[in-house]
Structure formats: structure tokens, C-alpha cells
Image (cartoon, rainbow, N blue to C red; front, side, top):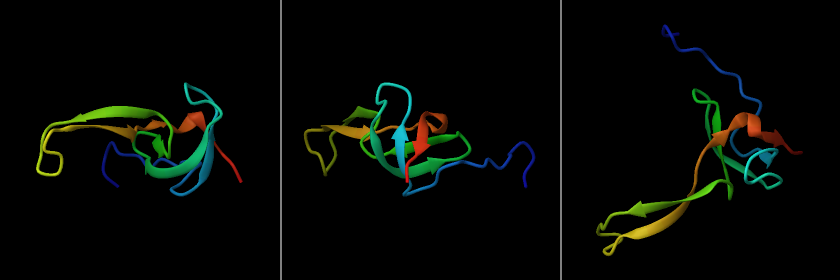
Length: 81
């Protein structure tokens, strides 16, 4: 183990069903898409949606505004069976 990096135990993992217990999306349920243990954050499907402005590319010739899920703190979610 490297110096300064500690292993963090999280109470949820990828593909768990969770319910948001605090914040703007309180009460919303969803599946965990990604976990960031070093930052103690998770991305939940359909929760904390934010707009991302994309500059023009070959895929989006005029650019685009995409809605994506952003990470929320793991303490704001509760595992649902």
C-alpha cells in the first residue's frame, strides 16, 4: 500500500439499489452506476442530473447539451433490498 493512500470501506457497491436520503433528490431510488471509494462518492442512475455543454465534434457537429448523472456523497444514500 502506498503512503498517504488508505483503503476505504464503502457500504454500497456497483449495481446495488439505493434510495437517496438527503439532498435535492431525496426519496429517489436508483441503481449505482459507478463508485469512487477514494472520494467517498457514487453515481446513481437518474439522480443529480446536470447539463454538460459539449463543443462541436464529428459526433456532434453543432455541439450539444447533454444531461448526465453527477456523483453524490455515499452518506446520502441508503441500500434498499
